[in-house]
Length: 376
Ligand code: 2IP
Ligand code: CA
Image 1 (cartoon, rainbow, N blue to C red):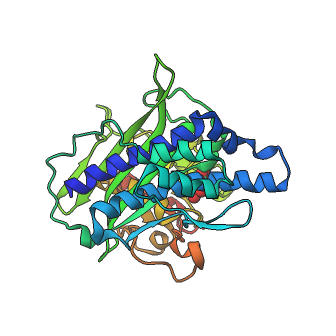
Image 2: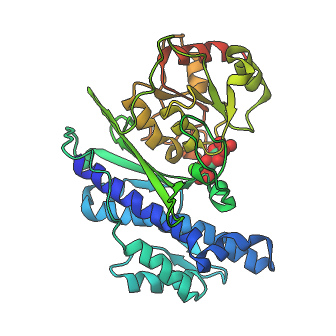
């Protein structure tokens, strides 16, 4: 398990490098941002490029995990399909090949022959990341890769990634939108129960290096299985005066009745808004908010699996909101990751259909569920 965690940290860093390269290299950046100009075909091509960046990142992760743990092949799922159609209507399956040159040749076919862009992407894919967090070394978890499955969100909060607004993050403060909301999410779940047991969150755009001005990322990870709960983030400290008033982060598109109910529960100044499903759960992990409430089924297994594992390692979790509202006040219905929901079709089968509440503290979860009961 420590070996798997180490690999996921490493491959998430490779994925973060691809995400950074697409914004830093002029040839790729132009493809990422020039959507508003040009004719329809050009618009379609650029739209494709955004998806391609996602697909490439997902395939890097799938390739590297499958190569080291063949027993996991077939259980590595993600948001994107690797069947890709380029601007000329040709269908190409994007995979990572044995060498940088082979991968570049395949990507050139998707990129309508843009050799410069293809070579830059291929280089990032085949380059091993410099160093990764070694604090997970020595961890032993009694689970074998053949019992596990993986959910990948190659870039969560894609709109923030494309928009690219740069924010200077302030310690202890939630910053609602910007490049830092874009996250690479890799979650590991138990095939038998669907319980999330390991998560890696890579934030490719955490801060800019003062000297060279290049973006530096930040890694967060956690393992939660049985009695073993380890997380790279330390638990938010409770001050001498006890827990401060409850604060909740929401999507700006949340229903008015939820906003109003939670405003009465916490006080309007304790409601915050932020972009990205993964980023909002990360805010709870970091103690920047006590909970994230979402009443819609607009997130998916790949959005929540990784951060859910970190929250569990810290003593919290992520529950299904609709199911929790129907249960007795003490029951907790944690999200699981192994079964599709019957209601949806296609990708929607993997939606967190009943909405969710991500929380750090069980008594705060009870207050939130209690307040929302009968309102939705
Ligand atoms: C999205 C992204 C959005 C979020 C949505 C996710 O994933 O995180 O920001 O909406 O739920 O599915 P909101 O910001 O309103 O919470 P992606 O960017 O990968 O499509
Ligand atoms: Ca997402």
